[in-house]
Image 1 (cartoon, rainbow, N blue to C red):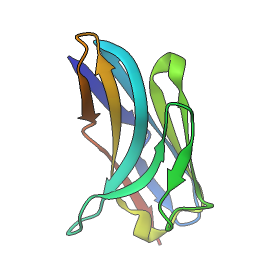
Image 2 (cartoon, helix red, strand yellow; image 1 turned 90 degrees about the vertical axis):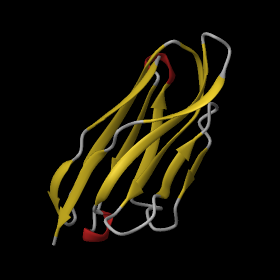
Image 3 (tube, helix red, strand yellow; image 1 turned 30 degrees about the vertical axis):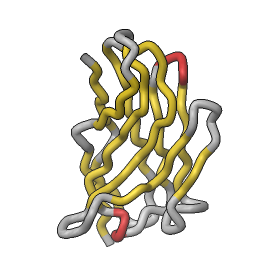
Image 4 (cartoon, one colour; image 1 turned 90 degrees about the horizontal axis):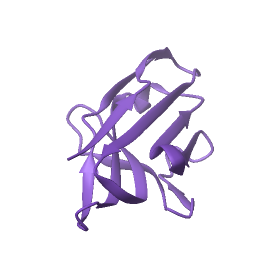
Length: 120
């Protein structure tokens, strides 16, 4: 079994900052790409940022220059530092991970999500 657990969401005023964390645990042999996605009410889930095993990063245009994704490979954890938050950043944020289990399977796992609310 593999679990991804997000933390760090909450309510913040526009212009503020939050740092999300997502830790992967369980029968993990290796973690490859990790990422953050978000889903606002009535909208489809969208990519926010991804980071490869070699720490190459990719960002949605809407968050470039404001959000930073990073990872700690020793802890199988991915972070999302969110600065200059805007009301349109309000959403449930989900992390995912492409990993190899100890059984040898390559699979993608998702966390349950953490709510981020930005007030104007």
